[in-house]
Image (tube, rainbow, N blue to C red):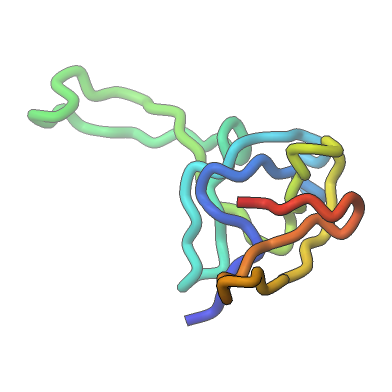
Length: 106
């Protein structure tokens, strides 16, 4: 299964498309498809019929997935979009590191 450079809960900057320049939190990562769902980005309307979970039904706006290559991780420390590096800690754990400031990213 392919890996993504972002995870659920990361803050990302959208690079291309209608929502370019917008920042949002990753709500879900879909590594099998190479896509991510970002909060407030790529909003689509879905027509839903009434169900036990949604008794009202109607038109629902929700986020649709966008390709992971169109988002860039935002470092929490330097607050700027950055690429990531991988680093091994002394205990052998692999972590993501900000290329700009060297801060560990969860």
